[in-house]
Amino acid sequence: MPTRLRPTAPIAADAILVGDPGRALLLAQELLEQPKMSNHARGLWGYSGATPDGGALTIQSTGIGGPSAALVLADLAKLGVRRAVRVGTCVAFGAGLALGERLLVGEAIAAGGSAAAFGAEPGEPVRPDAELTARLARELGEEARPAVVASFDDHPAAPGEQGATEAGDMQSAPLLARARTLGVKAAALLIVAEIAGDGALAKEQLEAVEKVAGRAAARALLSP
Image 1: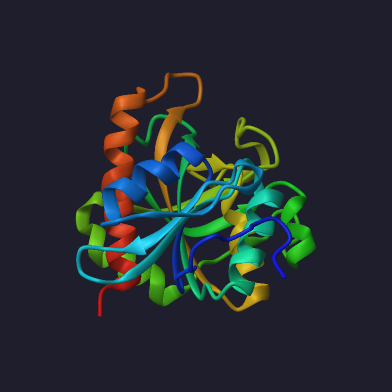
Image 2: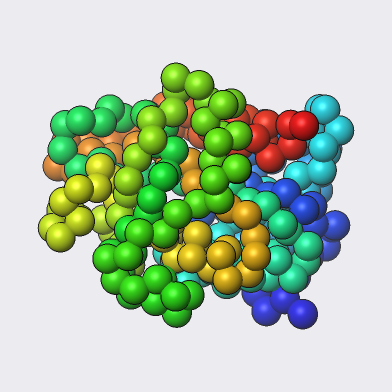
């Protein structure tokens, strides 16, 4: 039985995972015809329903950080999720990236210890599912930039030993590592919401990019 989620509606085999409950609501309203709240336990809002094309989709918030995301994914796997795309935010290191840019994660470096419980040692790259990542790349076209990111257990700081990475987040590496142990196909699409030491994306701008990223994730999951 699930340990964190208490589903009140059917969970789809395909899911979009977001950290922020508000983002889950935003994408549910954007992507689902008649979204039904499928979870509100622990403040982890989740929604399920049909897309305009008739595909079944769940959009689930995972909370802050890798451990919370890994627990939620494990519950979703018990409930029948087989493919998942993380739509999240990241902090860019240096001037090579622009606010609002979409990063398609090719490798997530375990820069914190939370991925170790799922077989990824500190400094080890964790790779997403190749097929699902390729589908995301096709849907995004020139809008997506392949990237190597580092996943920290705290707010991403200077890259340090992860100097080859372009950005940092708090979930991708442990989430992808957990997906690997669960047999769930998973990929990650990140939005540059902050540039270290040089500002952040405004709320309205972030929401607009979140909708674009969410639509691409839904198409990648559900397109034939």
